[in-house]
Length: 180
Image (cartoon, rainbow, N blue to C red; front, side):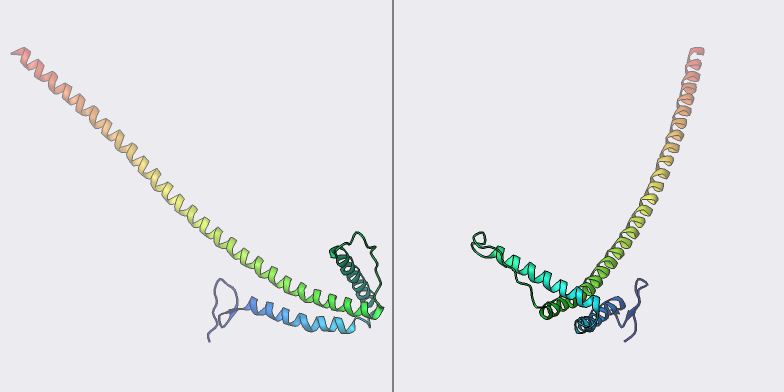
């Protein structure tokens, strides 16, 4: 297959290079997320963050379950913290999935922005072409108007000469007939 190039964007065998790059980023995000999940307990700040995320998520889920249960007004809300190991596991899972989601969202936003940028460029080109057509039509219209004005003046001058010559002709005929 022969590489195709259009709109100054690099392509590989007809498939846009940007799309392939986006897929590569999404694919690489998964092993990085797994690594985050696997090392969450080993790194101090990451461990603390994952435990906090796990506990906060557990609290939010318990709160939602309480509010969506029938008769939630009649029962007091009770919350039990997760064990640290369970909170760490849940937090690491959420953090790794958030990383994958952020990578995919970044690629999608980049592709969307790029498509919109291409649309804007195309619209600007169309607008410039239309402006050029309008300018050419305005120039033609101005030339036609000037030609009509010149023709009108020439016609008026011709009419004036005709009237002058007609008057002279009739004046000389009248003088001839009065002499007779």
